[in-house]
Amino acid sequence: MCLHNVRVVDDGADEVFRALADPTRRTLLDALVERDGQTLFELCTRMAGSGIGSSRQAISQHLDVLAAAGLVRVRHEGRYRLHDLDTTPLRPLRERWVRHDDRTDP
Amino acid sequence: MCLHNVRVVDDGADEVFRALADPTRRTLLDALVERDGQTLFELCTRMAGSGIGSSRQAISQHLDVLAAAGLVRVRHEGRYRLHDLDTTPLRPLRERWVRHDDRTDP
DNA sequence: TTGACATGCAAGCATGTGCTTGCATAACGT
DNA sequence: ACGTTATGCAAGCACATGCTTGCATGTCAA
Image: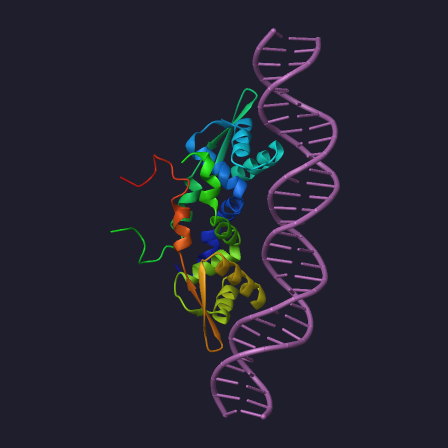
């Protein structure tokens, strides 16, 4: 719990935090939390509807970053690339920086 | 809950996420979660002990970013600059991207 | 007051990052 | 087979970012 194993704690979380640093990627996670198995084109359409004017390639690269962080699982079905959300990398993130006084509500 | 108010949800959270994107800043939060009121020099010493070889100016700038995100409150006492942790901006962050199946343990 | 200590401020630099551009690949329908 | 649809790949560019450098400011002890 001391500061010596900070790097151990942070190890692996770096990719997750950096993946969450972009608003477009966060919006992609918002879209994926509603329904799994969405296509790249499907996500592009939703992004365009959310006021995010990113191109297909840009969104594809964002999804690659999310996949590298373990937040999105990619599976292929025919010519479609389907994306599933995986929130398990977020769990240690939620438990971090929790003060003793505001752990859980009584 | 639809995708239309995504920007509203994300509004204000952008600075927080970008502040958390840096490993040095996360380590600073780790140091501050243990004790409030730590000095810049004190934090520099702890960072050096954690294998982070950042200069004083670098750490000062990191603390500025954390303060701009609302994660750190800065107060002055004499010639010392004391830092307090504020975890309230993290609360909406923890509740985001929570699946219906893993809300809270039974 | 003087010197040491703790911090503030700003410009410059090297790297990282998001995005675009252009073309290649692969699967599906007809 | 052929064209369309959905996606993959890679180079290049504009900008953001973290860090350094150098000096200025302010506070405290003697």
